[in-house]
Length: 102
Image 1 (cartoon, one colour):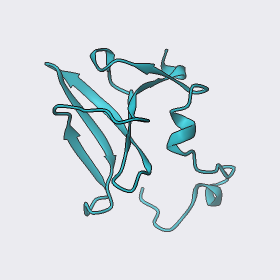
Image 2 (cartoon, helix red, strand yellow):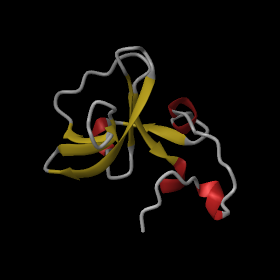
Image 3 (cartoon, helix red, strand yellow):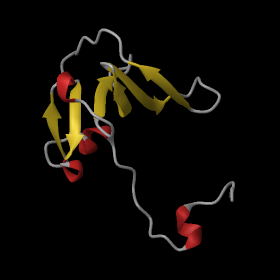
Image 4 (spheres, one colour):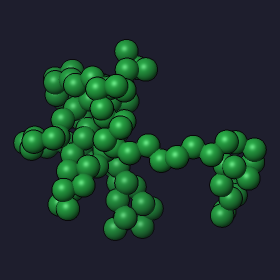
């Protein structure tokens, strides 16, 4: 059932603040991994063109192709599914695995 314009608190759930990329990908909650170790559920931390941290979630890895999903305002659905090509990491970027998945 779709409920438009309702928040989780209106259904009795406690308010939870937004968890930013910096916190989610910090050493407290995740560990760095190499691209060769990536699997479903891992995170890819990048910078947008405004130097703001952005995070993508790995959906699957098949035949060395990494498929990921991330938010994208310019897409009508608000999300984009894509595959990694040649990846060149910049300072502050990287691949991370949430500690709860270890």
